[in-house]
Amino acid sequence: MELVNILEDEHLSMLNHSAAHLMAQAVKHLYPQAKFWVGPVIADGFYYDMDLGDVNLTDEDLVKIEKEMKKLAKDGKRIVRREVSKEEAREMFQDDPYKEDLIEGLEDGSITVYSQGDFTDLCRGPHVESVKQLKNVKLLKHSGAYWKGDKNNKVLQRVYGIAFDTKEDLDGYLEALEEAKKRDHKKLGREMNLFTISEYAPGMPIFLPDGMILRNLLEDFWYDVHAKANYKFIKTPIIMSRELWERSGHWDHYQNNMYTTKVDDRDFAIKPMNCPGALLVYNNDLHSYKDLPLRVGELGQVHRHEASGALNGLFRVRTFTQDDAHIFVTPDQIESEVKGVLTLIDKIYSVFGLPYTIELSTRPEKDYIGTEEIWDRSEKALADACHAAGKDYVVNPGDGAFYGPKLDIHIKDSLGRDWQCGTIQLDMNLPERFNCTYVDQDGSKKTPLMLHRVVYGSIERFIGILIEHFAGHFPLWLAPRQFVVIPVHQEKHYEYAKKVADQLEALGMRVTLDDRNEKLGYRVREAQINKIPYQIVVGDRDIENNTVTIRKSGSKDAQTLDLNVALDKFKQEVEDKCLFVMD
Image 1 (tube, one colour):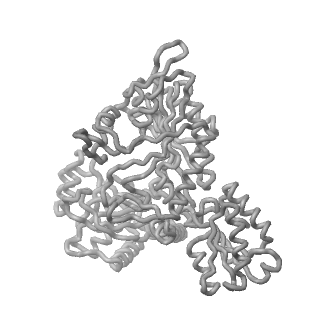
Image 2: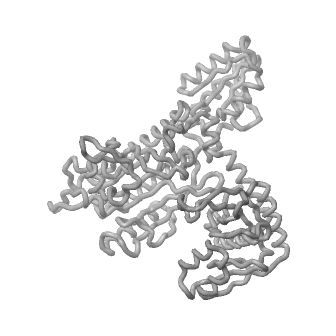
Image 3: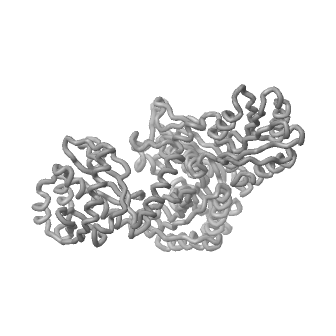
């Protein structure tokens, strides 16, 4: 049960693009006044933007459109491709101003149209051979969308859908989609009291007490792993002067995404990135080649402006904390340091059960700094580091940053969704801009190279991913509320329940003793809803035998263990950061 990425599969992309045309044909049958903008393939299917005049679609209308699509698919018309001139295209779509706008942006001689029965659409293709292949389609939702994404333009109606080759694949995807809705981090974050977002601070999450426990555990783990890998830790200012951002290049290239203010008649900006601060730290001392590599880590809070319509829980915010580190190296240290970062990434992601893939982005065709020789050497160093770490990678040609090549780390969650979190970027630009130097073995001054790298990426976003990955059922070490001890009868079993809770607390566990005057079933169900990893119920037999009856989060089964045996297992489970709760 996984959510596939349609864009990663050439055949599914073609199938879904063809389904978008079939949907447009069905809409045209039901709403002859319809005019169409674009209908692209996206990671989770397809959509089509359309102008239906005075008609506003409802969920019931989607059912009608889908029914018409299935009728057309059963009819089985072939999909035929034709090349037309710009003049012919204008004539064919003279009654559709949206298509006319598209045609004006096309070059003569490169225009193709696809026809199926009574419907023809402007399109580059490719498409499947026949609409008969489009039987397994589901329309998912509808929304409004500005024409061309411009808020000054008319709002069109956007309909989303998905298509697969077989009914089994479609049903599996829809099942996974329902599971994803249940796992929505915004929903679970609210139910589990982890975070909230106020209208007074849009896009700026507020972490609640349980959410702070989770966050602090992640940060403590990060510090522990990095300290053992010989990183030094810093903290740089959140607000710094315009001159710094001009020197780094952010003022010219990123100003629209920065929050600015004036202090003592000088322009200042809240930092959107941590890199310039790390460079100031480097320049605070003189360095020789013996000091390198220098690994400087910072959990730095940054602010970046995002459009209000793009904000999405913890996934798209206006302030977040990057688990940044900047590693200053000599050219011959690149490979070994990248290998070290990959080893560290492997250690961290494996704790959460997150498999990952690596993408190597190489030199852009133009607008890059440095010589081709340096780029070739740098790309080879990143590739060799992957091999040395035993990691495969795919090449993403020409997608490197202007200042150097990079490795992007893509994790997969329990529903098969892809998230780009970690990255390792080689920078040949900023150290030179900031006049960073070190004294080499021959006594000459040289400029170090710098590796930018993150593992979590954004701590806020990573928490959102973990909420959905675990569906709120966190491993014991990470759960904000680890245990609830429930006496069957409040008075009769309270003392023993208190003893169990005290012994758990003595081990450093987070425990709640639920002795409320409520029915046992109610208290157990509430603990299950709150996704507390272990619910420990104690009654007469437990008191007699010094045992505890344990139920896992998400399970209906219970297990009885000797109290001391259970305590030892719980302790080991936390120390080992086990992924799954105790059997």
